[in-house]
Image (cartoon, rainbow, N blue to C red):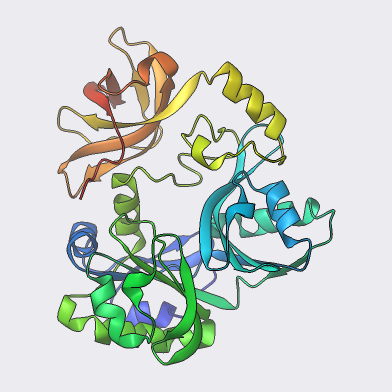
Length: 360
């Protein structure tokens, strides 16, 4: 089991620790609902240092990124980030990721913790243009400072104007006494805030300063359980649940990051799929009765015919109702369509809704 540079800090804070993607991670501190509300209403800090980071360097860096990624990274300028995915050759997804343009010949790819080795092998396999690749995952830490009060709470820690860092842009600047960290206006919660990339040797200093600076704003450490309920309320995909090696980005509603303005792995087949249309779609749904949908539950129609499967589900802390994501047949994917979730022996009524579930 791998530890992050902050594992002992979490244990000292009384976090409930669980194995996740090969790492010993804090799942909760005071309970998922309380932590969820902290992020929605004020500010919380997550240790997400288990995520993977690859540097892509040199004159062929962009060529490699364009080949392996579905989105068009040529549109980025220095200081911009982009959500993307690695399509595989069978029409599915190797992983979803964020692409950062540091400089014209220096790029950062941030990948999911459970896929670090798989992604590293994949990108090396397709590096026919011989871009320089460095896997820096074990050297770097990542904190997510999330919530509507994040800008105000953290402004004292940096000379950078945090309010000027727009969504999916970033600055390399001073933060909490460390001179060169990436301050990125990205996150997985839908409540605003920043992600801070720094070296393992720097992260404890930054963590302590963040908690101190946020004290008057009610900051609290937040675990992975609340990260999951927060992302699900936004309808954000989780790799391994809602997308995987067998799900097409078009089925998953990720057509907006699948750009056919360039060639990439499997682009021809995905282009054909776009033209002919998909047979199933990932949709959001709300339960109309009491119940909690869970991954793997069957979705049925009025006649009890199977029409799909739940990929993620929870009791929404913000909405106080059961919500979920799942793949259903195309004819059942329209907003307001009534569907049913098979929860053990009960057929629980639900309806397809427009995402996100949580609207500020």
